[in-house]
Image: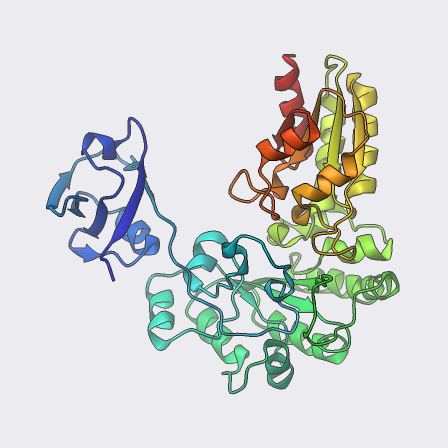
Length: 433
C-alpha cells in the first residue's frame, strides 16, 4: 500500500504551487504525523508552523518548511479515497436493484465512517473495528450519519441480512457518550420496521438526544429490477397518507418536548399521500435536507421570496425537465415566475424507464428518459436540467453526458442549481439581463 495522499491537483496561484508541488506527488506526513487519509490531513494541517514530507512522483523525498498567513490554505486537491466496502445485504438496498450496464462505480456499496464524516454518507456501523471506534473518539469525528433502521436487534438483522451483529444501541451509546453527534435514519419497509418496531426505535433514539441530533424516516425505494430479491411492500398513497397522519403529530410532540425539531418524515410521504406539508419552521435548520427531508417546503419558501423580488427578463421560451414527484410544485412555481418575469417555461415531468415507474424523484432521471420525454416537442431556446440529475458534474446515471443529451435533442442544454434562486440567476445570466 502506497504511503500518504495522492495529489491530483494543485490550485493555480496557491501556496502549494509556490512550493513546487505537482499532481502525482504524495503528501506523506505533516509535522512528522503520517497521513492515512484526508481526515488526518485536516486534523494536522491546522498546526503552525508546518513541516511537510512529500514523496515526489520521480521518487525523491522532500521535507518542506511552510510559512503561511493564518488560515491560508495550501491549495491541494487529493485523489478521492477508496471506500471501505459494505458487507450487508439489506433487503431494500438500492444498489441491488440497479439495471445492468451502468458505470461500475454505481454498483459499489460503501460503508465507511470516513466518508460519513467527510461527506455525510449514511453508514450502519456494522464494520467498525475497535481501532475505528478509538480513532472516531480521539479525533472527534463528528457528526456521523447512521442508518439505524431498527433498534430491535432481530428486526435489524433481518433488514441487513446479517447475523451476530453487536446491538446498535450499544454502539450509539458509546459514540454519544464520547461526545460524537449523530444524525440517524430509518428506511421504512412496510410490515417490517414500522408499527411497534418504529415506536421502539423512535423512543430509543430520542433518549439519546441531543447527541442523536435528528432522526429521518424515509420510504424504501423499489425499482423494476428486483428479480431474485425478497418481496417487499411498497409505500402506497394510502399507506403514506396514514403514515403522515400517525407520525407527524409524534414529530410535533417530540419537538415540543426536546425543544427543537428532531423527528422528520421524508417529503415522499407527503407527496405520495397527497398531504399538505407542515410549516417551514418545523424543519429547524434542515439537518436531513440531503436525505430528501424538507426539500419541497424549502423550495416553496425560497420560491415565495424570489417571486417578491423577481425582475422582468427578456421573453425567453425554455423547457424545464423534472421528476414526477416534484412536478406539481415546480409547475406552479414556474407559472408564477413566468407571470413575474415575462418568460415562458414548458415544464416536463420525465417518466423513469431506467429504474421503473415507481421511482419518481428528480435525482434518478436518466438522459435517455429525458430524450424520450422531449421527442416531438418544441423546446424553445434551450432545455434546463437541474444539477441533481448529474453525477460528477456531467454524467446522467445511464452514462449519457450533457453534451450527448444536447446532441440528441438538437438543442442547447443548460444545467442549473436545483433551487429557485439558482434557476432564476442562471436564466438571468443566460439572457444577458
